Length: 120
Image (cartoon, rainbow, N blue to C red; front, side):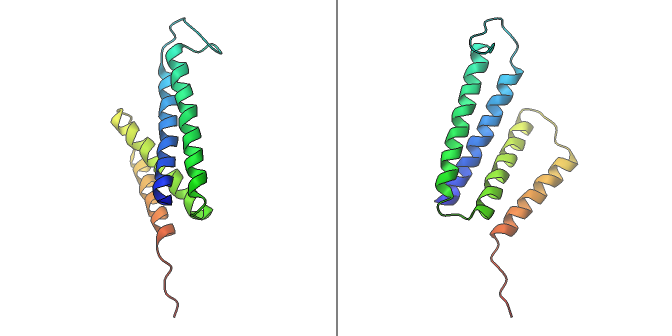
């Protein structure tokens, strides 16, 4: 269960990043509400704050049972891979370098979770 909580935490972080990206791409409509933000952009930003908050709570809960040296890389890897996936779905390009980086990221997380070799 703590690993599922870590996955959800990473997903919340990716969602927050996506919402902030959406808010930043909206055209100005001239109906600024708070801090000079348009209503839709403000809602996206508030949603991002909520998603970051939920991710933080889930991460804190997962740390009760998972070591920090394992939890943080997994949570960050989930976030990065989900953001890359959303980028591809939105038509952003993926270079060979980006793909190689994602492959190395997955390999590093797998190494962290691999059982220790038996000593002779």
